[in-house]
Length: 152
Image 1 (tube, rainbow, N blue to C red):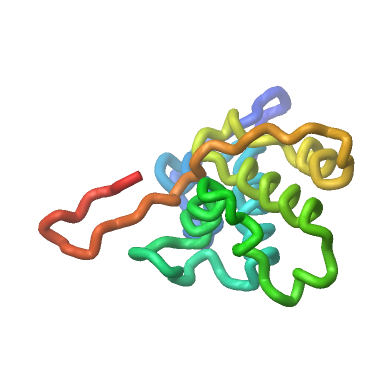
Image 2 (cartoon, rainbow, N blue to C red):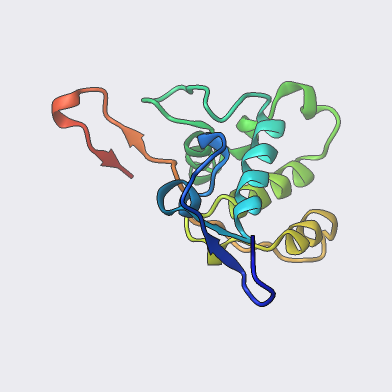
């Protein structure tokens, strides 16, 4: 799909599951080396939480990305963790994995790490993690169709 010296391509046909698609692919048909990073971040959050991205959480129509971001902002990220994992991992490891997952689902592809950087961030505890920005598709939609708008 990519040329020899290209890092992204454009496609006329978008296929896949929307909950795992990067915003640049879902909205513009642009596939890049960071598209899989986004999908990996969603999958990592699902593993940590034990629920699918498309499930609804305690607030208005929020997906897993929005729920994880809300907890991260409130400094309650460990509330995201499935009880099955709580006894098998340290809080530091779980926080690191949540941080990396949130870095992977950044809205702007350039803000996401590469997959090789993800591997380093997950396995090398000496590497300082940057703070994530608000993830893509983490907005809350209002329930009233007359006032339907995106809120951050």
